[in-house]
Image 1 (spheres, helix red, strand yellow):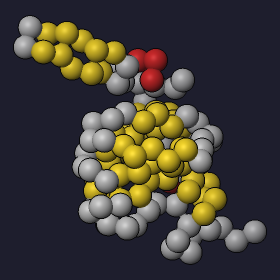
Image 2: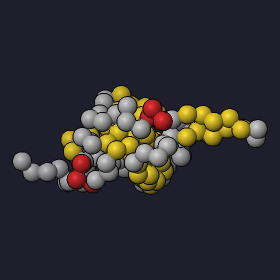
Image 3: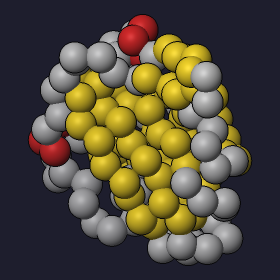
Length: 120
């Protein structure tokens, strides 16, 4: 697993923290998805991702499994897995940590509501 092998919990006298990446190549984004909208069903060949919903009502499709994610739940997307997220109840935010080489050209769209499929 690219990146996820670095994940660990570090205990402190005041509580703990989760460390996802240590000195490894990664990119971090926060997506905001409008209620009822979804990103494309996509996969990547050069990166894995970790999704952490920040709000209620986020559904993550990972290889056909629909996960009704709770805020703070960690959903790992391995390299090559088909995935998308949808905001069902309200506008919602998703923290995304990408492990490996990040490049928008690495998006392979399998379905898209917005006409962004590549023409064969």
